[in-house]
Length: 310
Image 1: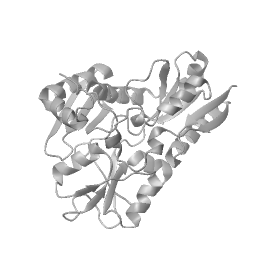
Image 2: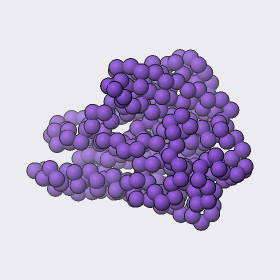
Image 3: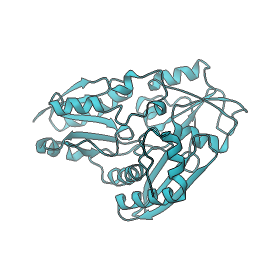
């Protein structure tokens, strides 16, 4: 079989994901090499991601390595991958999804509800901040950057009363000991694509497409395509206050979406069902734009880019 070179970020979670895919490929008889690539997002560690606002900050350098032929495929957390790939690249597989929800971690407190007034909560996500502030405007939200280990350690050392992270990363790394509460989609709508991995290749690499086809999960493809279509319609990257969660129940695809002011003063929710993932995502996005998402996102973009129009 072939010798395949995987490009990945160097964080503990990114390496777990790349090694997970490597193991699956080796089971198919392939020889696999891993190349670690430092991205823009990895280099900026002292600023909240929402303030950077660069689409593709975790993928650009990896795509350059793909284009140059230094690697044959890239393994990404799907929520980090822009909704529109640059010309010449293809999202060849979306892996089986693990728990897509966010979770509440704390040393002292059992739930968000149990936090005292003015408690320090760590997150650098405007999406998480906005939804937390809806029900708990009294909480103090503080930036939290770094890999999973670093974030959990800061919690253990008392820098925060609680932090909010994705369940998927904690589960993959076996770091769930401080998880106190799984946050429902009604309370904390997840990020588009959360819990799934995206496998990217050069669009003209037919051989690689054939090798990797077995990694594509139909249900994960449908739900995340729907979520990413919504995000694309709203013009959002992974650092704007937009939540999207699609699921298939009794063969019916439904999408729940949220757009919120970062301070929690206004939140728009929409839930619809449909047969076509892209059409459903775009329809829900259009509905939200008509309901006021244009104004919310315009404020968030701060004039740096034109907000989407209904």
